[in-house]
Length: 225
Image (cartoon, rainbow, N blue to C red; front, side, top):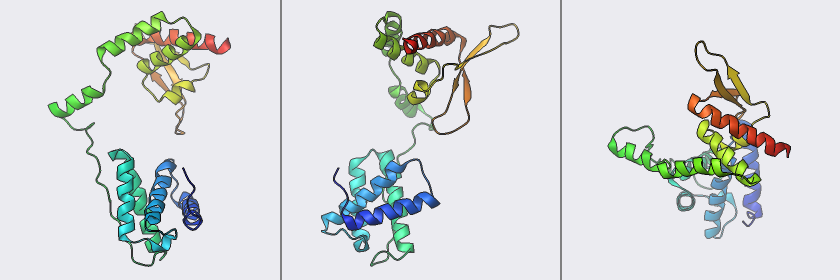
């Protein structure tokens, strides 16, 4: 929580602004975390000038990142540390030559692998039947304003899985109905993606359409209250 030392802080701000102009990213937290780790590693050696960065400082910064974050986040943050090292080396900003190549290993992607072991790991991450049944019971039992809002948001997330901030950002006219020959009309929700993509309609399975419609009705009533 403490500010970076003046010498390193000036470098960090200049680097951040320079990189954001050439290689902008929405994951600014990882870029800042990499700089903080490098600054902390320097401070452990009694230094605040980035010119003193060397291989041992970079290794310690990577170690701090590995201790602070999960494997997936640590890998991505360490990649930002690699970018800092490349930038400093290219522009001769360190007293010695710097080489930093993927200081932390990448976590294996279990989501796309097949087999009983990986299927079991995926199943472990899913809510239990009891939890899903409890959500349904809570939705039906809700009476107070807070209960109505929370259970309605949960119902929409079960009906059309999405980021919770996109559910909270649904507009008043988000409901979309489209006719189908010989069948019940298709029902969907128009989402506005939080990462800047064009608005999209997510069509719901018929069994969840009435649940979503009731949830929208409840949220609309609570918004107007």
